[in-house]
Image 1 (cartoon, helix red, strand yellow):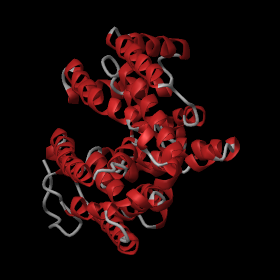
Image 2: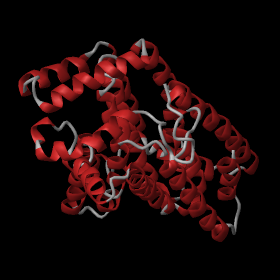
Image 3: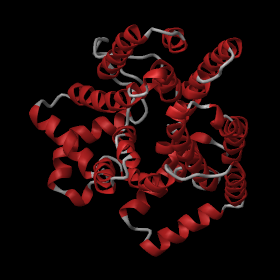
Length: 362
C-alpha cells in the first residue's frame, strides 16, 4: 500500500529529488526486512542446512549439488562468522541492491518499478540463489546496448556460478536488439503455445537429457525440481491456462503501445519487450510437461515490470493515465495475493531474529 501510494510520484512533474530519497529509503527497508527474517520463506530449511554443512561440501565437491559461486559465498560467511543472518544480509544487499540499482537507472519510472518489483517478486525479500543470479544478469544489459560481447559474457558466467540457469540469458545478446513485426511476434507466440500444449518442449528436453546422460548433475536436479514443482502446482494444464489468459491480455497491449513510447525510451522499451516475448516463448514450450524448465524464462519475464511501468508513464491523457494507475494498483495487489497464497504457510506469520528462540515453525 505504501509503495503503491508513493508510486504516483512517477506521474507528477518536478518530484525527482523526493523520488530519489524515497526510493533508497524503501530499498533500505526491504534489505533490512530480508536480513532479519528467520524461519520463513521457501527453501528455508534446505538453505540453512546447506549453510551448516557447507564445509563438508567444499571438502567433498562430488557430493555438492549447488553451484560453486553460491557454495563459496556460503563458505566464506560460515568460516568468518558462522552466522546465517550475516549470509541473509549479504544476499539481500546483493540481490535486492543490484536489482534496485538497475531500476534506479530508469528515473522516470523508478517508483512504479519498485512497486511492481514488490508485487511480482516480493522484492526478493525471500531471495534464493536464482534471484541473486538474475540480479547479476541485469547488469549485462548495458553491454548488450553497447554491443560489447566479452564483458557481457563475463557477467553471464559470473551469474551462472550462482545459479546455472543464468547461462540461458546469453540469448539476450541477440534477442534484445532485434526488430520484430507485431505479426511475427503473434505467430511465434501461437506456434510456441501449440507446440507446448502437445508437449514438444518436454520431448526435446527429455531427448537432450538422454543424450547428455540422465545421471548428469543437471539432469538429476532437473528431475528433482520438476517433481517438486508438479506437487506444488497441481494440475499443470490449469496453471498453463491461467498463464496464457493473463498473457493474452497483456502482450497485445504491450506490442500495440510501442509507437506511443517517446523516442528517447523506445529502443529500451522494444528491447525489454523482445526479452519478455522470448521468455514467454520458453514458458509456453515447457509449462505443461516440465514446469521447472519454465524457470529458464524467469530472468526474461522480469522485464514485464519495466514494460508495464513505461506503458503507464507514457499514456498522454491524464484521466486515462490515472485510471490505468488505479488499475495497476489493483493488479499489483491481486498479483501479490496470488504470490503469497501459493506458499502462505511459509510466509505467514513473518518471523524475525527478534522473535522468541523457543518458537519453532511446524
